Length: 239
Image (cartoon, helix red, strand yellow):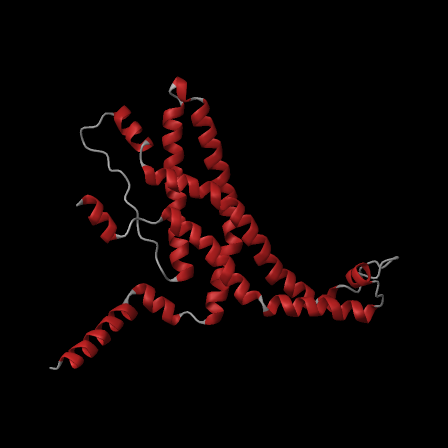
């Protein structure tokens, strides 16, 4: 076989392996509508998880630091780090599901068999990746609030504006004629309906790129803090 034929065969084999992987099959099978709903579910569902994670993480961190001198804080901090590790594992699974690209698994410290209980606690407290998990737990919360608010506005709010004519008729209209009247001084039922419907059209028409950008923002933080080192760099450091 010639060199060109061998390269072409190897390339087809590599493509076949890539498309045959779970992530590759999933990325190929999910349609545009499927990706849209996955992103929307990821963004809207992230806020409740973020609230629980942020509350538990910050509470555990403050309690552990405040009681560290009387030794109660040591197991409290270690427990908080393990809780952050659990939330980090959940986030890695969610990022892999919504993007089709898994986050490289990090390396956590493994205690040796001969370590005492105190040594295990101190060793867990010195695990750098666990602190990165906790940092993500705290830093992701304001981003989740932002992405949830914008995703909700662009989808649910956009749908509500698009259907404004169907539900706005019983609203009281005293001196103000609606949003259009407040902004531009234009009164009237028909202009008000047309204006709000146009807002809904614009929001829904731009919802796909908006959700794509919000998902990229939220997942990029997860990849930066929750991912392990590439194998090449890890081998270079160990060597």
